[in-house]
Length: 356
Image (cartoon, helix red, strand yellow):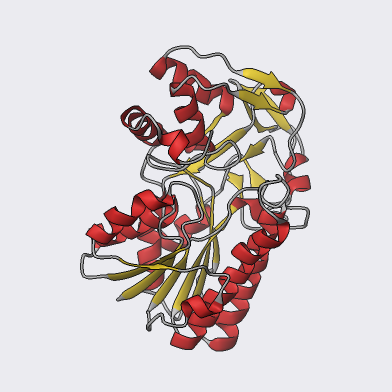
């Protein structure tokens, strides 16, 4: 089987490529990346050592894909994944849409040409910011949780946010670009008769991730804390009670293999994949974990809210469990400890990933 992975030199793309080859060394993996993300060049040689064919290509340019030979499946792992993208002063809104939406369209045209299946790695940020912000929460053990005495919107439970939760804008430009990509991917698949799967991923985290304060927060926080870099809780009274769950990309592998082995199916095409309540924690809890691991380091507080932040966003992946017998296998503790060990053995990681 020939598999094309876009964004292969990013954390998710490289982890998935390595993991698939660990499971089946006979796979032929072709990788596309424009290497625009700081630190992504570090994954070039490890991938080449596994026999991955790397193509320096910009998905925004259709001509960059013209020479790609026929493949069986495309995994779209390329994106600018920050909710602040397009409004943070470092990226333009046009570039965000070109990367996240037009890039996917060009991959869909490639899938159409070769009649290849496509798996889109989407995001939890396709869910409505206003609806997420309106979920009644209570403070418990230094973290926000849904208020069990309040009226919860459709698609919300103690298990997290389900696929039927509102996707009504505003979402963020990032979230809207991914939601539009989802719609077009499903339309292309239906119209041109090739299989499409949409995997809405929670926060991806693990050793070797290029974390920043607006994306890859678990990796960024641990690396910054270990190096005694100034940190601060933003919004929500500046106390760090905002809560997210995390998932290691390697936990996607069983579902990806099932999806690539399934062409004709009545199974749901859009599924959440996240760590769930068991793999969730607040920033305040993460700081306590870091203090136990590295020693105390003060964290400042800034109550001023930041655009598109929400108090609680945990993924409900029960539909993936029902559909593919899927559940995350790598524990939160294992993810955090892996990041910590990597931080200790790579003292310049934040600088290399342009997080400072």
